[in-house]
Image 1: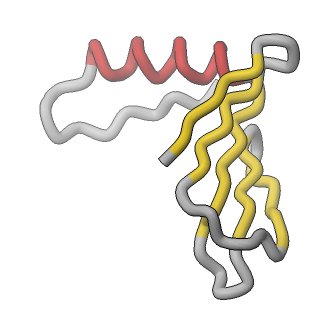
Image 2 (image 1 turned 180 degrees about the vertical axis):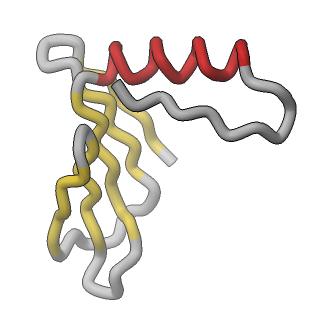
Length: 72
């Protein structure tokens, strides 16, 4: 797994495999790139600094086993 952050465009990229990319789907602030077999290959998190700030705050306040909504 490889992780890269581009500060200029505020995008966090998580590469989960080196498989070829067949297509991508946008889901809110996420773009998921899929292999021809339908497996996720690459995840782009748009507005990553805001997302990570909300995720960190949620992680610090959540109780064990609790799901926390971090949607804006």
